[in-house]
Image (tube, rainbow, N blue to C red; front, side, top):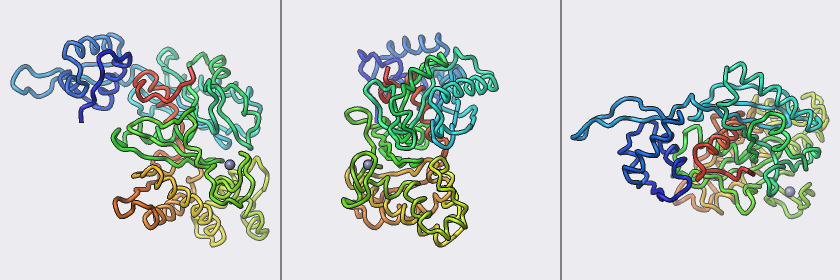
Length: 406
Ligand SMILES: [Zn+2]
């Protein structure tokens, strides 16, 4: 179906650049057809994109009677974007080219309970190391996307609301990192980034709506509707971790009770394991808040190897997730779901099986269409890749742009 782009749109140039990106190799005639713009407009816009080095001519297409058309493609190596996943247990950096293709990565220690300005200082230093290693000029970097847990404030500067990292609650990540690094910084929720990462790596057409369930320390969900992150009123949509699953359930740090996160997230799984002293001892669980994710990984790995006690704990967590996802599927008539994030790294196959089976047997629309479930292939890097995509989209596709907080 043709995308119609209004000639008066201030985003026209970016929209044409995105049509070239998503089309791979296209002619000006293709762009006239898909954009709905006139040939004269396309010729003018392509000329400015070429003079800026963003688009190059790459040969000739087949003739359809007249002169063979000149083909265009994105000059992928002309610009780069950085994505950083700001996670409790590890920082993941990725660098992509203008087409969103991964060109480098770096993994370092997580934020843990380190004082935020100290982490920002480390990020600035690690960014320098990575760009130097890749021989990328700072002037060729369009921006740095940062994926983190939590709510956004209206300025988009603050993005954490987590019991495990209270120091970050009112810390202006965007301003601090911009001041330290000199780059334009875009801050976005990690679940939204993970969804965008799936979209951007090219596995999903823009016509396909889908959700990504993201589990790290907390649980969130990103909804991609027609190629854009669905943000809601304040870019805070997707807080499935605070969907109430049990009205009589345990108190949640958000002020409610019986939230999915309190029943299914790593903390709940680890607490149940610690209550079984024999199991906790045999797994060598530390029970320290700072080692929560490592304790969860120990349980998940043992479950993946078939330890019956650990399998039961992971199945219990998966069962709660499945119930929340049935509600989500019923609410938005979901067609496709990805499971992403470090929470699925070790026992993803158990989560996948239970969530798929329950959606198959209990989703309201199951007789009309299935809900396809997949484990993310980009896995641990999905949030960082999505964060890089947020930065790229500032250059490429303002019509896709999630609120950047500028
Ligand atoms: Zn809650």
